[in-house]
Amino acid sequence: MSDYLGVSESLSGRRWVGPGVEMERATEALGQTAHLPAPVCAVLARRGVDTAGAEAFLEPRLRDSLPDPRGLKDMEKAATRVLAAVDAGERIAVFADYDVDGGSSAALLIDWMRQMGRDVTLYIPDRIDEGYGPNVPAMEELASGHSLIIAVDCGTLSHEPIAAANAKGADVVVLDHHLGGETLPPALAVVNPNRQDEADAPGYLCAAGVVFLMLVEIGRQLREAGRRGPDLMGMLDLVALATVADVAPLIGANRALVVQGLKIMAQRGRPGLVALTDVARMNEAPRAYHLGFLLGPRINAGGRIGKADLGARLLATTDMQEARSMAAKLDELNTERREIEDHVRLAAMDQAEERGLDAPLVWAAADGWHPGVVGIVASRLKDATHRPAIVIGFDGEDGKGSGRSVSGVDLGASIQRLASEGLIEKGGGHKMAAGLSLSRDQLEPAMARLSELLAKQGAGDGGPRDLSLDGVLMPGAVTVELIEQIEAAGPYGAGAPGPRFAFPEVKINFAKRVGDRHLKVSFGDGLSAKIDAIAFGAFDGPLGPALEGHGGARFHLAGRLEINHWNGRSIPQLRLEDAARA
Image: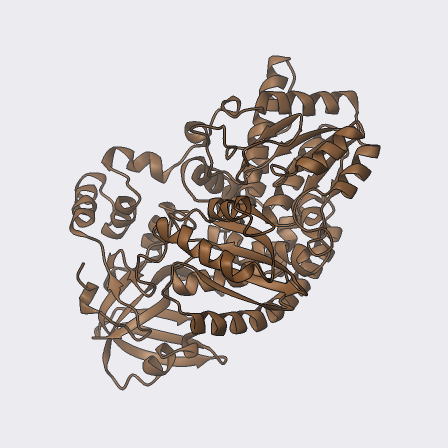
């Protein structure tokens, strides 16, 4: 594959890779029949959309893509038991994971139960004291006062804790999406598209998606009985939030769930999300980017370094004053989390670079790294190297780690394989993210074996520094309308990377440092057309100094288009990621 625009090594040391001949032909064919701008056609072609499917793709409808809930094993049994408990006024507990997906799943159930006239007990374990998932003491305590426990975003591997709840007389329903083991726990129902005995199930769903499907099934049972249940469409803001924040691939039903959920969120009807968007200073309609990078980290901050149930309670509250108080606390915790993360990130990157960044797996481990930030740091290493990454913090001889993967490499299955081979104490997750616990003695052998397993899946085959581009644009072609049309081909995220375009041989009109690390740029074609650009972290490497001291030279620029909303105006902007001398 030839270098795009002849860029074999950009200012940041990357090779630029453009669309192949087949992709260019598909883009051209779409342009001739769908009557859409070429950049939009390029995005659609990359996502495998042909002329016949373009209209439906740009206007996804949930009814066309939502799986039949009854296609999942145990779904009917789970829905019947939950509805029976609600109708009988039984005491119900929700045991949820401490991340955004767990909190959103719990809030979905709390919201639905409230509308059905029922209260539930929320239990979220402390990340440090209790770890991930149900534990025996907590389940025994819940079972002593509740006849039904619903485990969300956890539970599929919790054999002993669920057995302990059963022994106390409580039924347990598991609504999860993490990879299942060879045997299932003794729950009344385990609804999980990633059970090993599921075939053709929508394994891409996050836990909130599974919870939503159960509520759809309960709605069907209510209608069959001549009754009406709560409005489920109004709850899609929570499903969208969880889907994006949990890095679930934006394909199939997930794409429709997020598109519709963003519309619901824009109506600002949920106090917790309103308070959170306000404290995050969002001044535009929500996009997937906001869910993943502004809202998700703040909700997660409670589970990472604060009170574990703070995020779920924020999402579930109906009290605006309470919501503002909790959102402010989460914002404060998120700032603290960033400071802790920065320290660990720098140390982890140094360690990973010493070990080498061209292996199938990038990993780092050290004493005292906060278990609440190792997952985020793993994500940063993954983004920087385009390799699966593991980051582990040790407390004495015990290590707790978290990993993030790249598209096409199933990290969760490989981590579970390590556990089954006895190379780690325990571990599991899903394709894109996983957690593990291990001893200090197990560290080196486990990472070596994991690297071997990931290499067999193709990890590390691509150049770690390749920059993929969807095509070229000229400054005069970029308008707010064009960017809105490109956005309509989204949302973008895991499994659907946002489009990135190159602007060849442009003139730098203006370049100014913003703060210590960032760069503001204005560039154009040398005539009348010009675009503003922002390059975050540009002065962490050679990009900032080179463009700031451009000396009149022309450059190829590359990045993602976005709309900058400022003082009531909306203007096109390039989020600049890389550049090369023309």
